[in-house]
Length: 221
Image 1 (tube, rainbow, N blue to C red):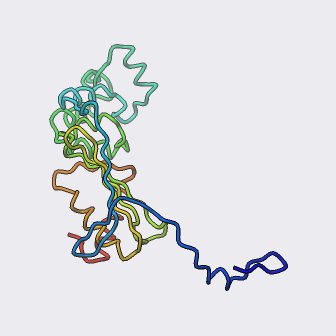
Image 2: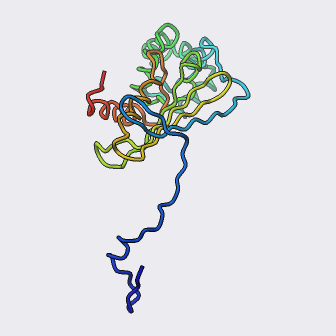
Image 3: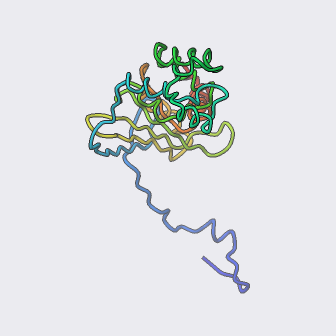
């Protein structure tokens, strides 16, 4: 490589530089019918599997008075000081009808109906909802990284699953855009009919984006 008297390196010299590219190690190469990509698996032992009795979770949710429109944290504290501890205790107040409707969904509704209730209230990040997701073996933690542009390929897929007392994290990485399809197909295999997908902003971004990329290749089911 040459340097001019002014201290600048000519562009042509840079383009002809034959220095070896830096090495990069990430898991192993996995081949599919659609091509190949890189795969890395990491296992993290669990001291104990997190479990909650569903009935206890439902009871705990009925103690949240802020689920009722018009009741915030301050008013809830005031009501609880007066001995109103659950949604049922609101029957002698002006919040009675709404409180009973919400309590009925929590106590007798399906898990889906409870999640829809919390979605309407924009409370889907409530940690107690995890206790309604059933067996932790159905949990699927999911995240993606893209090139940062609209409709751009996904370059990294991350999937976390609880198996045999441990959390197994599987990652699929692209070295080239041509490897997106095999990575997509491998990722899709992790999703099952009973999967409870847990993802930050997944409903609005990760899952729709994944489906859009599958549709781009004609693989959307």
